[in-house]
Length: 220
Ligand code: C5P
Image 1 (cartoon, rainbow, N blue to C red):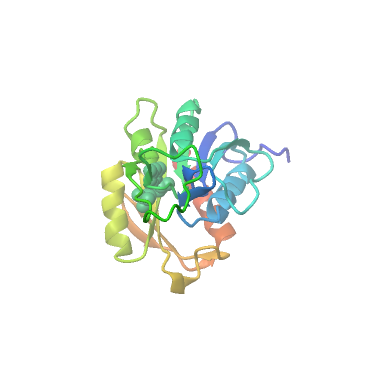
Image 2: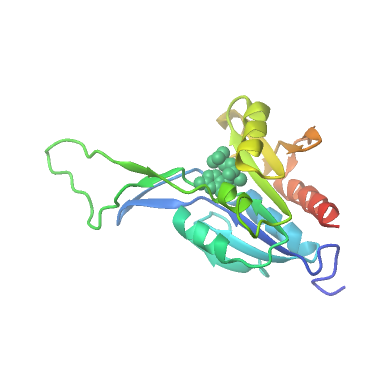
């Protein structure tokens, strides 16, 4: 079969993935821990079902899948710009681990140890890309967010779904003991209008395939 045959043929899906890096100075940054493995697997699964995929990725550990329309970014501000630039999107999957804060002002020179005490970093809040898209005029028909939590996973994720205005949330427990962060497996709960659906622990590739299948069903 041709590469773009499948239930998502003719559909355009946006996927965000990986961390963002927020510079402190030219040599330092703050970031969330994210390998980009789950977002990359989702993009690959969507391609496999025939979708056109715009893949907006921060600096991830894993290589982007061949065949996506790749937009590589560093910061949350750049990720928002790339997301806003994507046109005629049928569904959006927001798997990126976006840094909540950036420096109010990044230093344009390396901050030096000058013996006069510790640097004080002043933060500014980053835009919430998922919430922005959900509130936008061109909101995709289906918007899927993620919620990586370390406690009260379902409660926090359910509240997040309402607050951000997305259709589904893929919730997971990323406590270090789970081995999920940076690992090959994931243990997720899909939260929709119909409630919380607990999926068994499986490979990130399998989570991706199951999610892509559900997206295909939802887009009809
Ligand atoms: O970080 P948080 O738990 O709020 O992330 C929940 C969802 O919101 C994820 O899908 C993430 O990609 C998205 N998000 C975003 N922009 C942010 C923070 C989070 O798109 N600034």
